[in-house]
Amino acid sequence: MSQEPIDAASHLVVRQASKRYGATTVLDRVDLAIRRGELVTLLGPSGCGKTTLLRLIAGLALPDAGTVAIAGRDVTRVPPHRRNVGVVFQNYALFPHLSVAGNVAFGLTVRRRPKADIARAVDKALALVHLDHLAARPISALSGGQQQRVALARALAVEPDVLLFDEALSALDRKLREEMQGEMRRILRDINATAIFVTHDQDEALTMSDRVAVMNGGRIEQLAEPRLIYQRPASLFTLNFVGLSTRISGTVVACDGGIVQVDTKVGRLAATGRFLAGSQVVVATRPEHLRPAAGATGNAVSGRVRAVVFQGSRSLVEVGAGGETLLAELPGQEAALLAPDAEIRLAWPVSETFAFPAPEMAA
Amino acid sequence: MTRPLAILFAWTMALGAALFLLAPLMVIAAASFSPTPVFDLPVGGASLRWYARIGQMDGFWPALSLSLQIAALSTALALALGTLAAIAIAQGRLPGAEAIGTFLVSPLMMPGLVLGIALLQYFRAMGFSAAWSALLLAHLVVTLPYVARTMIAGLSRFDFTLVEAARTLGCTYPGAILKVMVPALAPSFLTAGLFAFLASFDNYPVSIFLTDVRTKTLPIKMLQYIEEAPDPTLAALSTLILGATVILLVASDRLVGLHRMAGTGQ
Figure 1 (cartoon, rainbow over the protein chains, first blue to last red):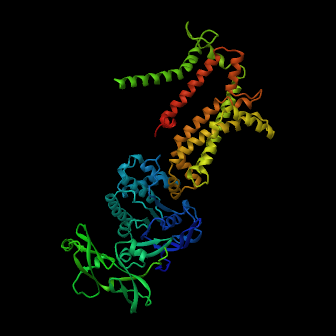
Figure 2 (cartoon, rainbow over the protein chains, first blue to last red):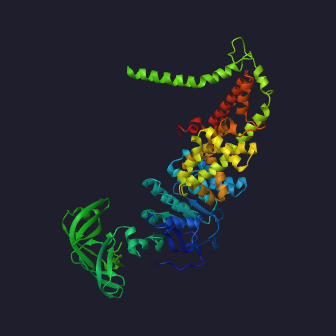
Figure 3 (cartoon, rainbow over the protein chains, first blue to last red):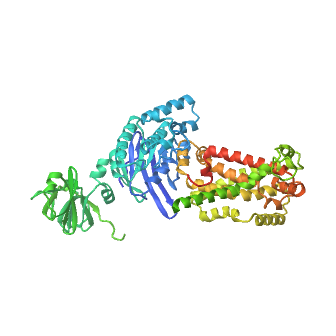
């Protein structure tokens, strides 16, 4: 949909890559271009093709059509051991018969580097992930977070052109995961690594990456900075998959200068978008744009409070109106005043209201 | 009151069973030191004369050499073939993988005599009469199930992502198998190899149909001796084989742990 032009400065370029397993199309003509030093996340539900795309880049799977190029070299048919990519696997895939240092040294030993060089590179990689004191430990003696770091050090030690992370943080518990997200981002920044993360966790995608590729049904729906993915979703799927939203179906009655007027069950709403009059659309906005208001400009809907979900500094208020549900995120003290079933009028700006084509009814 | 009694009963039964299983071995070991030329317990003093006579038995060295050759070769072949088959089965992408696995292990459940006669007829029908090669093939059939069973079990716990990790770190596919899968599966290899070797080395019912006058394995030769001249030389030989087996088992235990080999725990 919103593909950027593939420029010469791109470090990793996937062009028109397709992959089928039997009758299932896992990847459907995917284009992806990543600059050197950029961190990109492939975000999507399971089965969207993100892991397959990662495996194509690593060389662990071959595309049925299309090409993969790394650092200006076409590697579509190059086996993984000659691609110089580093992969951190979901279960870390550490070698149980080797020590921490043995694991980190593995790639260099295979490359037959001199012993002194290997020792230096292992020390450097372990220092980077703060595990230099555990070099002699067996893998089985490490915690999950430490194993994760060893896996990262092992991938870093060979100085790969591209680092690939396959759901690398999903096995950690929430607190450790958040810590590792920050630390990993710092490490990757420090060494200016080009990296691709695969995840189904939107928080991980939004916090860690320079750009996010939202994938669905074997295609990239949107490739953009995290802020844009959230604030300007390019499709209904992205809107749904990333963050919370209010979604109201309706029919376009007028279109003028990029603003459509839509008739809905909760009244007439204005939204940005270009549609022919008569089109079926879904009007949507993010919960933080909704404010309690008396007669404000923009879109406004009256309804009844259905539930208030306390979330610490802010609360999520669910409002029922004409069979539709509105989600508003309000500061704690504002939400505390709302009783269940109370009347409330919510307003939000037209500039933060989007219209998407309504999904086909035949599922 | 009943609980201590039950425990006492259980211990008595366990000890009794162990004694029942080990008694013949202890008797044969004792008899091997007998100073008299009959199978007897050494009451009036011990002697090592029968050990000295082992090497002088008619046709002993060729029989031992043949048994070792066949056991070593069939074990090596079974390890290679059985592991490859187990990889195909354990990766699970093969249609009917489970059925193939069961089929591979099935000779274990077949009486050796049936297998021996069947192989004899089969080789005859094919016009295949070289005793040595026939023995090797037959022993491959005997040893392959041990290897297949152990390796399928070992591989089902093996994480094939390790092979992929090694490949992305610079290993070719065969290199990754050698550098990662083989060391990770070393205990399984040792177990499989040990069982296969022992199964081949002391096989009688299959071998008996495939030997000729010049090609006789050690177990067959030993039975022949006992018919011809039943003196304690055989007891001495049996004791040596027993000793070698115990050493092999202890060494394997030191390397990987016997409980893992018996399949009774992690």
